[in-house]
Each structure stands twice: as structure tokens, then as C-alpha cells.
Image 1 (cartoon, rainbow, N blue to C red):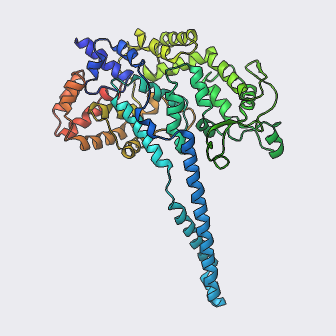
Image 2: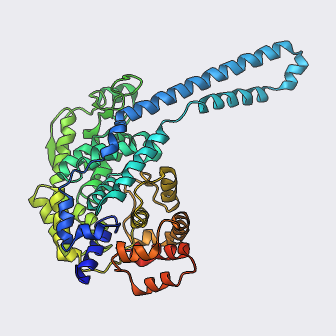
Image 3: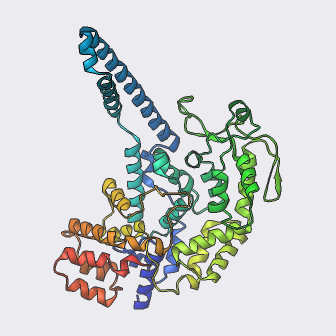
Length: 485
């Protein structure tokens, strides 16, 4: 393999994959573009995911634990009050007043708190196991292009574990991973109809003013899901839709909810359409009338949004910005958008169009990796393929990109300005990681074998002059060769 071929292989692994790991340059070979495309033909599944519960079962498990926790707390509080009453009856009036009602209340609340905390929270272990499998899939991949696409779409259609921890990992597996290389319309239907998204964007009890529930309960419409689908998931901002379109679409989406776990122990947490919440009658969205009366009304709008020309441009721009550059070449965006339109949103073909374009390869590796990509690349370079999910997710949180916990529905940003101030924190992570692996990772081997010596000369020199292996590893991990793609 020539030096130029090695350089292109390294660029392919950084820009489109998860970063070089032992043997990955050989796996890419002399045809990096062909290797990237070939990876898209492999099944995009987590082989160990069979041990994980589906999202609805995870939701029910947490709901059941919360119900037990509340019951235990109530019982403990009632028992504490009984004991206090018995003690008060045994005291004189003066003693009872001295004892004080405040102390009684505090004791009862403490008993309730302790009783509730005795019931384990099943949500946290499920989150960590999901994180472990997801991370290890990225570490073990030969290239990681397909995994990067899962990460991209999961962020594009994000939910937050801060709000729905039990479903966050299962949502990615069920809705995103299963459709990341399929048609955009299928991905869109899967994510918007997933209970995790409906919960996250507050659609569970959104009701039309003229619906049965709206009339009886005098509750209102929630516009969140309609607004985010148009602005973030499909059309993009300033693409011609109006506030009236948002309201109409929000009415269309009323009734999209989930089965309450307390009402149905077998199917709680699953998607359901509740006609009592749905605004009756037709709705006009982007100038088109939709007369359907059930969940098909929402699906019809979603299908049309997926096919809208603005969606192809919005999706192509975000993909190119994520993989190639903060300001991607307009010709690349147009080529990807055209492929999207010509193939009716075939996401695999859009990804192929991106890596097949010379415009995607011309720029130097100057785009700053997001924290998750940098950490994965750092770990992959050492050949490690298993992680402690507590440590790993904790590090992600310290770096400002907590797994499945974006601060807003727009997900984590993809531009350098949003992450450059946090580079200093990466040094702490690099030092800590280097200290833990110093006995098993040789920086010179990483440079020569993992990177095929495709490292800047000044980095090689700095690593060679380091006072210790730990320092050498940290310098290597903090270099532009690791941090940029």
C-alpha cells in the first residue's frame, strides 16, 4: 500500500469511521471508498442486544418500581404516624407539646424517604447496559461508518435520558438503528411514532380542543412535536411553513400516545392511538388537506414531509456538516440532496453518494471531533474493545456530551465553536486514560502499526521526547491527528 493510499485510509477512518484501530488500515486496503460502501452492506445489529428488554417492557419495569416505591413510602409514613400517636398518648400534655409536631413530620418524611430508596431503580442499570453495547459496537467495528450513521441519526432524532431514561437506549435500537440504512420515510415514521419520542416531546396528553377529552377535561394542544418535526427533523428552519401549519399538524398528531402501564400490565408503554384525544375533522398542512380520522392522518403528513424538497436539502446539509466540514462544499450538499430525491430518501444511497464524491475528501482533516467521537477514537487506537459503562458515560458527561442527554430537541451541535472551549477538559480525560493503560499500550506501536506512521512529524517528535509513557500517550491523544477529521 503506497503512502498516499495509507493517508487516504487514515482519513477515511477518521472522517467517516470511528478512527483507526489495530488492523483497520489493512481492512480498508487500497480502496477506502469501496471499503466504506461495503460496510453498509453488513447487518446493522447489536448481536448482544437480545439480553436487553424492548422499550415498552423497560418502561413498565421502571413504572412498576416507581409504584412500589410510592407504596412503600406511604406505608412507612403511615407507620411512623401511628408510632408517633402512640408515643404522644403515653406522654403528658406538656411533654407532647415539647416533643413538637415539626419533629414528628420530619421523622415521618425520613421514614418515607428511606423506604422508597430501598426499592432499586431499574432504569439506571438498563441505561448503562445499553450504553455498554452501543459503545462496544463502535470500538469493535473495522471502520465504524455504519455506527457513525447510527450516532448521527440518533442525535438528529434525539430524545433525552434525563426525561425518559428507561427507553433511551432501546429507542435508538428499535427506531434508529433498525432504519438508519433504509428509507428516510420509514425512519421518520419509526421515530415519531416511538413512545420515547412521544413522551420526550410531550405529546402523550396533547388533545384537540374539540376532541372528547378536550371538551370534558378542558385541556389543550401541545405543539412541541409538530414544531420539532418540521423545524429539526424534516424541513428545517425558514422553509415556508407557518404557525398555522404547526397548529394544524399538532392537531393531526393528537391521539398519538402510549398505553399507560398501570392500565395494562402486558402492553403498557407501547404506542397506541387514542381517538378520545384526537381533534376531529380534516386539517390543512402546507396547503394540503388531510381528511383521515385516525393515526393514518399523521402518517400521511409525515410521508409528505419526508418527500418535501426542503427535507432533502436539510438532511444532506446536516450529514455533510457532520462528516466533512462545518461549512461543507455546496456541490456536495446538492449531490447528496439530489440522490435523496432521486431514490425517494434511500439513506444508504445518500451515504454512498457522500463518500463517492471527491468533494468529501478534498479538505484537510480540520473538523474538530465531537467528544464522543474523540473518546471512541482514543480507545480504539489501543485495541480495547470492552468498557466500564459507568466510567465511560461519566467521562462523556464531563466532556459535555452526556450519552442520550442533549439539553434540547435539536441535539448536540456539530460545529467547532460549540466544542472548542471544552478541549482543555479533554486533557484531563486523556491523562487519566493514559495512566490506566500505560502498561498495555505503547505509543510508538500506535503510531507505527495502528496509524501506519501517518502522524504529523512534530507529533512523532513530541511523543519520542516525552518523559514517560503516560505523557507520550496523552500527547498523542491530544494531537490534531486524534482530535480532527
